[in-house]
Image (cartoon, helix red, strand yellow):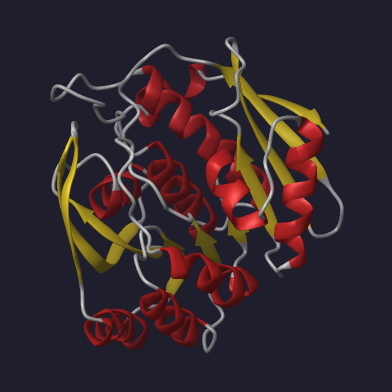
Length: 274
């Protein structure tokens, strides 16, 4: 069985973070392992508190997994601090494992999940190791240091991130003002690029979408799918999870991590060259 790892924060509400990742791994039939970087007290209404894990204990968790398991892919989510990022990057630099970086910065309710100085650490230490980075528009703006208002801006931001060493950049376009479609943009080091278009879904239940997408991508890469196919299947996974959302709680509810196996043949993602 393929083994994958998530390095992220715990979401007590179960919709994002470690919990969303492990549900996604289970749905996609890979064995999920985890390294917890922070505990959060949160629900669908927001995050009320964050308790970071000591850097030394984060290191112990990751080293314990690497020493015992043949890990086929790793993803990072909420890393919280520069110290945690540098520690993880140092350990991962010594192994050859595909790395998916989901640069989690802000919770759905607007709360900060990343210290300001950690942004530079992501650029300097994590992105040079990354196979894929999966920012949304605000995260891409922060990492690339430029505003994004158009496709030309997206291409420029992706170019900046590719220059940092990451092999593939996926900029998720859900924050753009297109009322009909959600379009994600994919760029590779060799100059290839394409976009993935799906219908925009009118729902408030989008808590954990970024975590879930990157976890699905990690699972598919861990199973050995070619990178383009893994990206397309991960897009289908999150599209179905949002389409068949769960009305849980009184705020931004979670996506449905169990929709893919039941509905995957009915999901259409349109691919365009960019």
